[in-house]
Length: 139
Image (tube, rainbow, N blue to C red; front, side, top):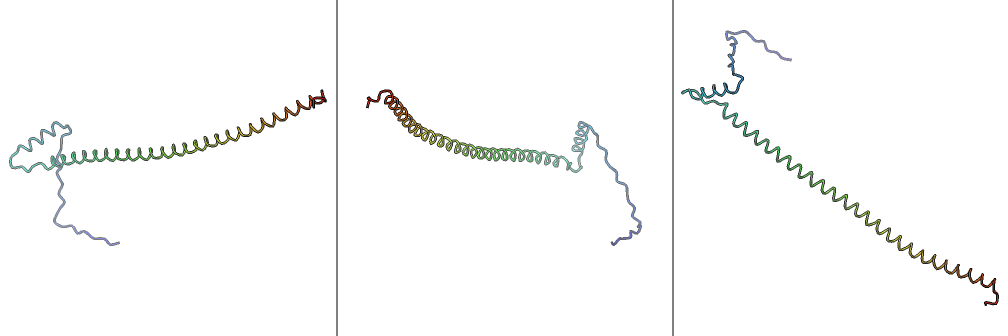
């Protein structure tokens, strides 16, 4: 690691005199006004900078709102699309369930019809057998 040896020269470090600024906004405004009214003084570089800072803050707030609105819109659209997909899937399942119930109902009617015919034939056989056992001459 290199290092540099500093040799003391005739130049001495001079203290910097800091300006004092009042804490209240009113007296600060009065000082600025007094400085602006003095002839021959350089214009205050702080005022244009403060104006620019205010403009940039407004622009940043505007961009922030626009980004929020854009994000909200995109999120809303994505949520809507996801909801539509979920509803579409639910409707598809419901349609399949309805078709299954309809098919089951048709099959049940056919089976019931076959069972009703078999039951009718079985009842008729019993009635005829009983009649024949009671009255064999009925043939």
